[in-house]
Length: 178
Image (cartoon, rainbow, N blue to C red; front, side):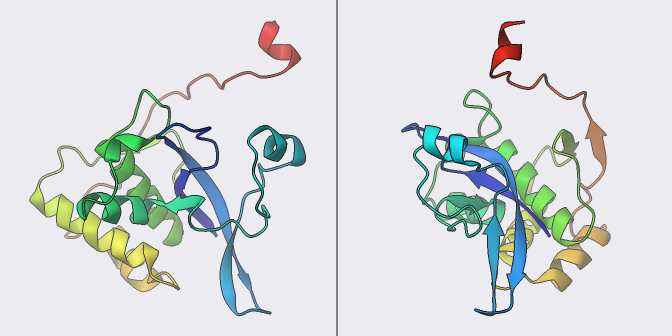
């Protein structure tokens, strides 16, 4: 299943955790869920000095969106260190990823360029985001609560998706010079 959060392993010494998506798979042998990042090939791991197994990404390297939200609510992390790009960080980025992760767990994956409509964040929405975040970080995730939240308008009336055109991807390699 898809999980949505923030990768700390691309920060390169900056106080920045970029939006990122991974896959969570059930591993029957140790009887646990583990995170897999298919983007971490050998050249990428070498460039970013990543020393963990991409088939078992530790939760201190990939921060689930709900962890970031709850950390911010508890005063343990700064919302400004999370976002899609270093110049576009903050509470809105964290809240959006919480909704995306919850939608994914409920089987309603949103595209990365879809912006769940959750602004302004009033107290009712803050409480709904608290509940979503808490349900998504439980081990295992409380999929029943997440599903109810994503389908019950009383919880979060924010899963409507206003898709903006995708941003141009950062270009690397020979095509970047074209």
